[in-house]
Length: 214
Image (cartoon, rainbow, N blue to C red; front, side):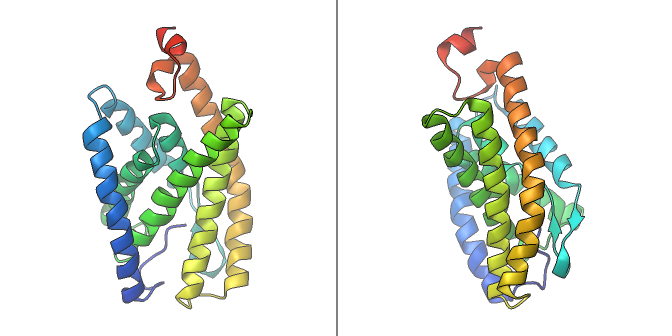
């Protein structure tokens, strides 16, 4: 899902960078207001875990790649989509600058896809599903699948607008791969929420007072 340099015209990349910067500023404000000392180790663990799961790339037709995202997990655990934007921005900067994974000019669009779309779809999908009666873990799993799948479709549309590849073949290729990859992401996310809720419920922002006391 990392869009490399040269896949988008520079002027389009600049537009995506401007939009991404708005969300990055909001994410930094979230970090300033919400990121207490006890949460910093959790953010570090989530960032390291997301970096690791994104390292397993599958080549997708027409030159891009498919992989797990992790935005939904970060947003659900920390209770805000801006947490996903914050963490994914850190991960993508390290990947792009140090490891050459994803472009520098296209880092803005990658932050939008994985951090913003992944985080917001994951968080609000989870909130909606949980609110209509689906249990916490199933809600997290389905929301993570949606976050992965929709972010991949967004990347397809962006590359189609850029003329990198045709829209329909791009949607089919990216959508098919990430529909399958999203199942793995959903299972990992649901399992992670389960283990955290069981071992350290106080670490979940949404924890009830009874869970935190336990």
